[in-house]
Length: 272
Picture 1 (tube, rainbow, N blue to C red):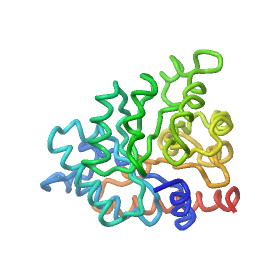
Picture 2 (cartoon, rainbow, N blue to C red):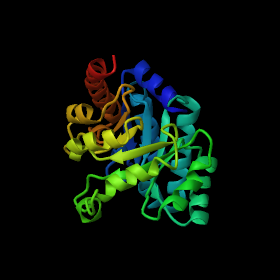
Picture 3 (spheres, rainbow, N blue to C red):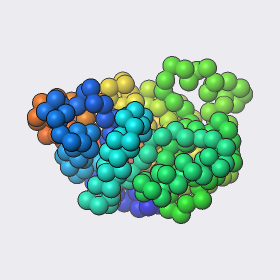
């Protein structure tokens, strides 16, 4: 899937919503915990209920790794289920990998060959040779950490002149085209999305932090949207944990629809 195809899905669904599958066994409805694979069953029902209103799903790998082999099996079943039943969805492995070239090559093989994700989040600290193994796969994407929304981001990302996050975004564009490279940009620093958009006018931005973390969707669009939308806005807790009863999936679908309707209005405003 290239950027034009992704924009086509955004136009078709009138949505740039990404649902984060941060599936925590302590938070899923209790009636699912008796099943053989409660994590997969939770994900399956969430995906079925929200897929009409989304263009992407983003499992956070840590929530699966924490369960060892069973967690990896749940993750792979989730990826396979989405690919088989909703192949138009853009599938993100939120893994934040980044290591020397040979190790990155194995990470890339895991997520692109074994699990068939469309993209993977990558940490840029070790530089170009730690990122290029992920870029060797045709029709796959690297989503590079640009500006994050956590408090500790201030420790390094704003150091230097220009700030380190700006150096990363400028340098990385020499490594790949906007059909291969996105950047993570936190919604809770929405005003800085304007600076990022100036540095990377054509790249998609993956924007976490809307909803439970306090980010404003309208501000994200004001500062970050381009003529082809250029945004994937992630919501996790505000959708998948909106209800803990047996009706959880229905409520998740309703929450996704509410965000989709807000996104539709913003698309009409910015991407006519």
